[in-house]
Amino acid sequence: MRRSRTSQPAAATAGRRRSVARVLSPRGAFTLHQVDGAFTFALRAALAMALAALPLVVAGRPEDAVYGMLGAFTTTFGRNLPYPRRARALALVALAVTACVAGGSALAAWAQPREQAGGAAVVIAATALVAGAAKFVCDATRLRGLGAVLLLFAFAVAANSTPAYESIPRYTALTALGAAAAWLLAVLGVLVHPDRPQRLAVAAALRSLAALRETPLSQDREGAARTRATAAVLRAYQSVGLGPPAPADPEGRGGVCVRLTDLSWSLLIGSGLHRENTPVGLAHLLRAQARLLADRRRRTAVLLPELARLDAAAPTGAGAPSPAGRARGRFTELRAAQLALGPSPGDLRDRLRVLVVPALRMVLGTGLAGGTALALDLGHGYWAAVSAAAVLHSVNVRTASQRAVQRALGTTAGLLIAFGVLAAGPTARTLILVIVVLEFLLEYVVARNYGLGIVFLTPLALLLSDLAAPEPAGALVLDRAAGSAIGIAVGLACALLVVHDHASVRAVRALAACERAADRARDALADGLVGTFPVAQARLAAAVVELREADDAAAGELLPAELDPAALAAAEQRAYLLLERLAR
Image (cartoon, rainbow, N blue to C red):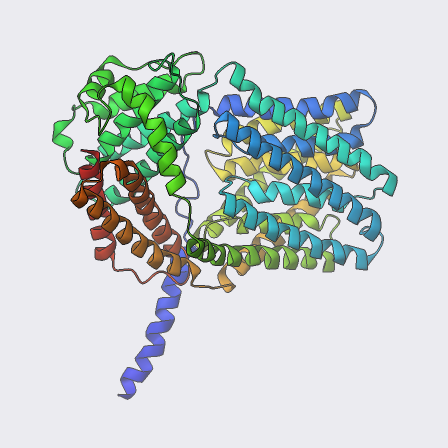
């Protein structure tokens, strides 16, 4: 008995060590992702920066150009949204960025953080609260990428300046103008390629299906690959369904995207069971079709003849006798399904609980990092808070550790670039041009790998700071290096110390929700309620995706979900079997 009592603490300690080693593994930090439309997006972002800054530099006000460029960061959001949703989302982002600059400038004018230690402490506390609010909102609205970090950066830059009260309206107006220019450039593409976001979403779904077909059946990776494909197809349906149908041209641009999305669904639901019924070179055909859709030189979407024949032979579903009729009818079905997918009040409460802890981590991390930088009397203490926020703007502890590695390596390379530029003593116009180039490179690579983006984001932030208030290059680079080191260390420590079980609770509830959706689908099949099939498919597919994502998120926390892998695999298998029956 004595040996048993002794071994229990030892086993618990070993288990904790394994959990920490698992979440701190940098595996995946250097993965490069394929991204469609990156060149156009990066060019648009760089042009927004140039439009916001160059007129002010020509007018002899380079220090004011910083605020216009902060507003131009609006273009970073909504990368793949269809144009109607992009216009609404970016309008809200533009308001948020402008409010951050206005609030930060007003706080700086009142607190004078560069003159008073008490004022600096107030600014740090406000920065932490803004960081937590931005994290909460970005997670709730599923804004990916740099998200909350850019909103925090806009607030921090304004809050750590030395404006007079009479300058606040000018800074706010310049930010609003920069955001308006970014908004206009982001939606202007509707005049040239009105269906490009839909085509990119469908292309991503086709590539995910190709990857699924190439995944060996005997490996556990198939489950994750199938979930990624399901999520991609659902996003394609959402993107296509939000676009207006074209009654006069059902086989035109919208028709091709809808037909390919329908075909993707037909291939997806049987991908794990009936691969022998599809062409041998299907993965190659899917990738070729994806390249055609992503080609910005083509004004209209082109459907490969081989896939057109496969689409004609695919099950059309209830009430859809032809591809053209299916293309027009699916819009109505999808809208009904999307309305039915609205969360219940209980789901909203559970989701709020899951969102609160990461926001609290963000508040704690940015506050501690900023306070540490203030205690050490760093020249730009807010850089520590921004670095901590960048580490904590993640899904779980595992992704936070990956962000820490990417941030450390990317910042080191970026500081070398910044020092080389600043040491050359560039003029204000040269600085603006370099910033525009860095913005292009940042947006071109950040979606492929966050660490690569930091290589260009670091010098961009330093050059913006130098443009607003020139300083010796060596001191500026050292301040940034020290602030980044503090922020990375504090952010990672907060991710490890603020332990919670919300992710595991989410996974358990996701399994129960998947089982309930499967039961409803089974009942619909048993009762022959054909009209409810699209809604049942949408609910069940979304539940399967949420189950896998929740389990992956919980696996990256120190307190993983106690889910039986066999139960999870059984729930997924049952869901896909029911989806196949519903599609018939």
